[in-house]
Length: 137
Image 1 (cartoon, rainbow, N blue to C red):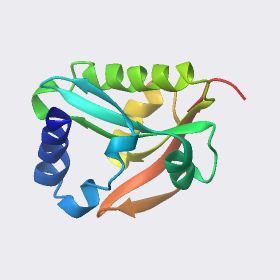
Image 2: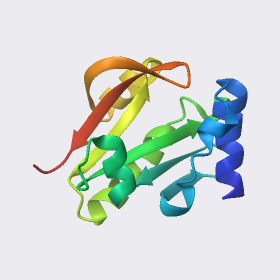
Image 3: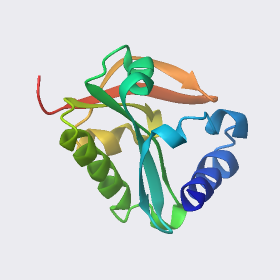
Image 4: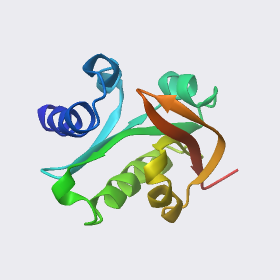
């Protein structure tokens, strides 16, 4: 977990000025993590943690904390992390993935099959939109 935390600290706390107390939400121990060493990381919330974030649907995982270091952006590693977490969700029999994308990253997620919905909102002072991708009804 040290490598996961180091990447997230660099991207969110240092680069994007997210307060550390917002970044470390206590859910990491219950989440599934993907790590591309020296490049990026992401996590998947499941069960009650996912339902609390996605509007109550335990059949939809929540992808979050996707962080790719500056030097690794544009290399495809972010997409590989997303696909690895989607594969994990599908392997668990879940119907899809919900995420809250920073507005500047909407195009990245759209290319991966996500659809934005609902109004723009602020999280940690950064504009976001809800997005979802499902592979079964």
